[in-house]
Image (cartoon, rainbow, N blue to C red; front, top):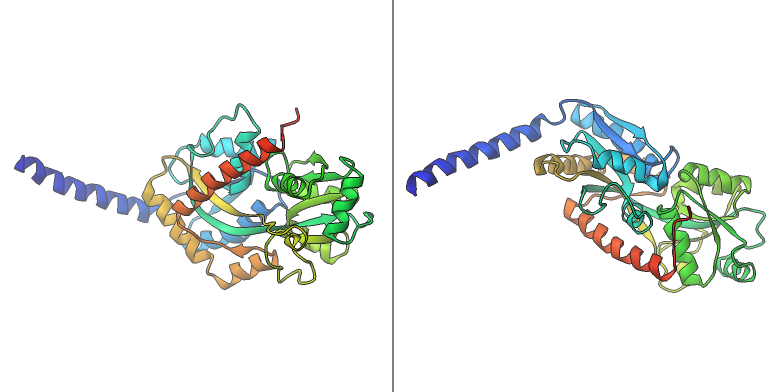
Length: 323
């Protein structure tokens, strides 16, 4: 028994040392960063702000790859099936990631079991926005119009299961209205549709819409945070009309389940450094995004909470994927 303990102690030390060396050597080659939506959406915006800094810090390229389709599930499946070695990452909002299982009956992955959350990168707040042709100038007027025109207002979103889709459903539920949801292949195309008048309304990430808001190509009615947003100081909160209304999510980095803990912790620490960089923070703020760094455990907890909350919302409101 004593001999076994004598053998076990140095063996454990070797394992710890090898784990530390593995972490220090990482990354030894290019890291693939999958964004499961087209360019222009919140996930893509955050990735293109944060990862150049990660490349600089870690001395290796983090290459962004847009793999869009099916509400983010195609790109997510690519990451779920990748080797869990830290060289393939997913950038996805927590809300979208865990809402898809409630819509797609045959996903090739389990959103909770097949991924490990590495860190949030940015906090995303949305804004209810309408095309200028709409004869409404407040949340209250929009609700009244939607009640007069049930299902006639076209709400564009970045795909079934996306954060924009979830926001639209949540607004319907809390406001007691019904809209017709029009899916697009990402935040960028959905915004183009709103600006062109193809759709009339959208509850999307502020960063996706702010340039068009400032150019008066779309009209903001209310933000989804409990407090006003500094970049849109004249836009009230939806909570001013619907008390307690709040909706936000994290754009987060995920890795395949089974990725070594040392790699996850190394990435988390590097994200923490990047998200404190003044240039990164400033660029995120311009897009009305708040830098958000938390331990992996916080991402896991948020995933579980959102999975249950969104599932309940979709069931209560009979949200179904339209084939």
